[in-house]
Amino acid sequence: MSIGIIGAGALGSNVARLLARSGLSATIANRRGPESLAGLVAELGPSIKAGTVEEAASADIVLVALRWVDLEKVLGGLPAWNGRIVIDGTNPVEFLDPNSPDAKDPSNPLAAYGIKAIDLGGRHSSEMFREFVPGARVVKTFNHFDVSVLPEPAVSGGQRVLFYSGDDADAKAEVRKLVEQTGYFPVDLGVLDVGGPLASLPFGALAAINFVKI
Image 1 (cartoon, rainbow, N blue to C red):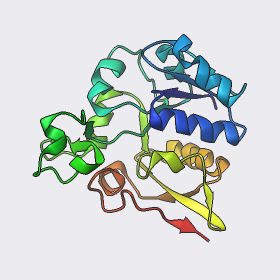
Image 2: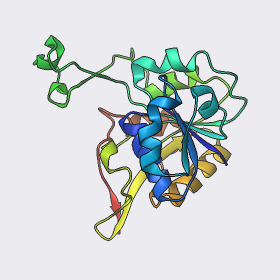
Image 3: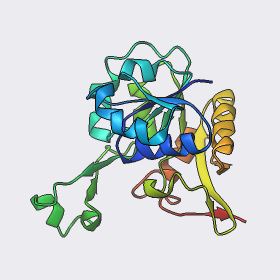
């Protein structure tokens, strides 16, 4: 299956590195256009190519690796998903300007990390994410630990654990296969309404926990 990555920040670029090291091909895109990704694709080699957002979104499996505040703007104008698989790699956080008052807000427990949680009004992020990609089969994964270690699934003589969840069994099976191909040990957390909140940063019970299968 073809793979697209929408977003080339820390998450998107590190998943692209993981895929390249695993011998898997993908198209990566951002809002600034393919030319802005020339350095990244030169680093990663021929299996990863730069494309437009529309080209990345046309793949069979599409990872959305955007900041939460950009989701509606970027995804809103894309063609119908028509049952294709969309991986929700997002988390409902806002990245703070280190010189802003928010970065020094003593009431924000995440200020030291340069982020703050976005108030979703009692809903969980994957519940809202589904609304940005109507008609897609959504699977949540690649979101629950430090993105800088994503290209390194092997550690301490074992495999890092990657959680995933979703409502469509066939879509989950395809994503599980992809996770296994990259060297991770996949763990199914069930449907999105259960697994999504468990693995979602910053406050999910399983978020930011780095399990290793020995």
